[in-house]
Image 1 (cartoon, rainbow, N blue to C red):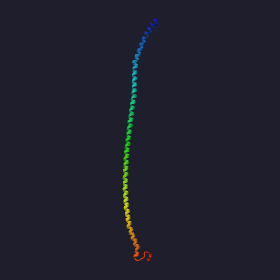
Image 2 (image 1 turned 90 degrees about the vertical axis):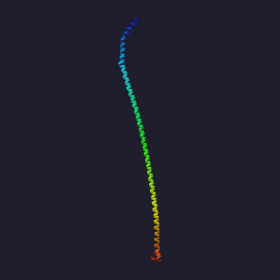
Image 3 (image 1 turned 120 degrees about the vertical axis):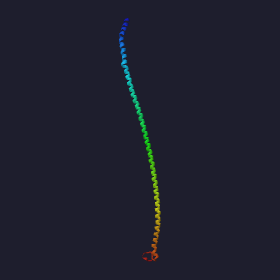
Image 4 (image 1 turned 60 degrees about the horizontal axis):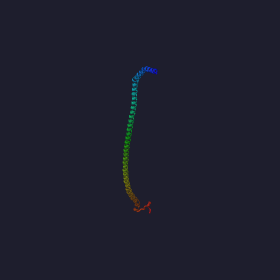
Length: 159
């Protein structure tokens, strides 16, 4: 057993330089490769994540602007429709006023025409009455003239 312990001690003593080399390499790896690599990966992740967050923020801002533009467009359309409706109402009122004015003018012309027609009818009746009396007098004179002279009203002067 002493022999085994002695061989084990020699083995451990022979392993010390390997352990030292291993620890040195591990420390060098940590300082030279691992820390810069972790820093570069962290920076890369940060930049990537930052770019993704920035892109998300840009997309959100674009969505907000799009919604704002859409709202402005809706408001502009509504304003246009309201203006068109007001204009249409004004045109309808103007048209109604023009129709009423035209009707009033037409009614006035019809009344004036009726009054003129009534005056013409009265004048015609008066003229007819005057002319009918004159014609009646003429007819009576023509018929009675031969009788007054002693002649028969029958043709040829025979009784």
